[in-house]
Amino acid sequence: MDYILSILGPLAEGSLVTLKLFFITLALAVPLGLALALIRISRFTVASRAVNGYIWLMRGTPLMLQLLFIYYALPFVPVVGIRLPDFPAAIVAFALNYAAYFAEIFRAGIQSIDRGQYEGAKVLGFSYGQTMRRIVLPQVVKRILPPMSNETITLVKDTSLIYVLALNDLLRAARGIVQRDFTITPFIVAAGFYLLMTLVLTWLFQRLEKRHAVYD
Amino acid sequence: MTRPMTSPMILAEGIRKRFGGNEVLKGMSLTLAKGEVVAVIGPSGSGKSTLLRCLNHLETIDAGRIVIEGDVLADNDAHGHARYVTDAEVRRICRRMGMVFQHFNLFPHLTVLQNVIEAPITVKGMKREAILPKAEELLKKVGLFDKRDAYPSRLSGGQKQRVAIARALAMEPDIMLFDEPTSALDPELTGEVLRTMRQLADEHMTMLVVTHEMGFAREVASRVVFMDGGELIESRPAAAFFASPEHPRTRAFLDSML
Image 1 (spheres, rainbow over the protein chains, first blue to last red):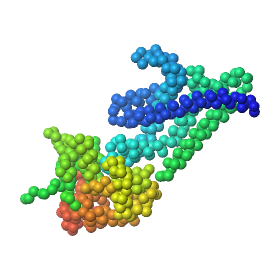
Image 2 (tube, rainbow over the protein chains, first blue to last red):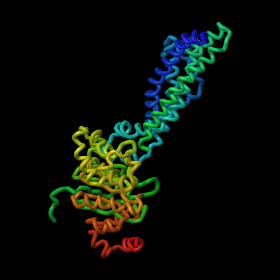
Image 3 (cartoon, each protein chain N blue to C red):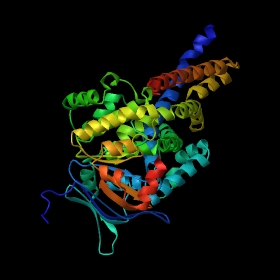
Image 4 (cartoon, rainbow over the protein chains, first blue to last red):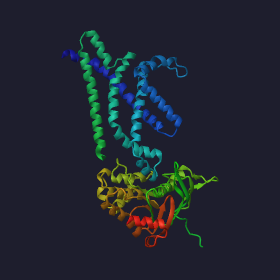
């Protein structure tokens, strides 16, 4: 027991890195994903196709590869060649990757809204932007809660990939202690930390779903 | 002939509309004067709903001319193709027409009251307090004031349609378009919606009603328009229309309705 208490400190520090990456990724990927979805369904064929290609690229290659590419290879790419420190590189990779997945979730949600809602808004004088903001997107939120719950839980666990950039996240902190003390207890405690995070998320999404169920 | 003092509420001339290879409106013309209640009847597929949807830009016409209260919405160019005015103009003109749909199209995430005040607030930029008295008055008028905080999913079809009418009226339209407003309702619920519409007609609202309710057409409409195959076949005052239909196709349709 004393041993567990003694390793909680370093594991909590690792959790902070994990949570920081999680929240910053969400804050960037959700709006970016929404923007991508709106372009994807827009009438601008060229832009729509470009987004389609982007989503294919980001979903079609491993996140780990994207992470390595942005950190190690981006500095050597002509024009955009910039060298990012490790944590910002991780954020860029995660945000770009998750935005692609979110975009598809948003697109599915938007396209599931009945055409009658657009027509009802249009005959009342709503512009396209007003229709989206006031009528369509509020209804989309409710429909995408289950897949968004899935995706955010996956994100919590995907954050462990940043060990390849030698960032001290929860899992890497645990591994460090395992190698130092020759015991697997830190892994079990780390699993507990992950479970706690996903439990909070699950609970949060259930509450959101309940709140949006009032108009069923 | 004397010149009319005011322009008609709706002037539609030579409207052509094609969906793929199927021409749904074949040069249809229609005029609506202020305060007129016109029922549009005809077999399904005759183009009634399409005509209504063309008038308020839910569909765009291929050829023809639409003028709403003297303002041109669309007109033919030199090649006989319909050209619309700017998007902003289209929105400004179409806002004068309220519309009620067969399937209500209420906003499910908003309560009854919110459905009614949403457009005045968002589109007209009105303050909530400024529109509230009007909204409550409208809900009382359609008999749903006690349901103001309910969500549409809790309402019957007839109640939903009455909310839809109140929602359209909150924008203070000059013209009301009804697209088969009772067709999706259980028979015992059509009465409450028709009563609300009759009340509107009594207040001299200009109304264009696509309907299968011959009773409503006969009793409330001032004029009945019969359409078939994308063309206007007959347009006469309601009493004369039902008493002595002139065209054989009208007679055949009316016979089939009995």
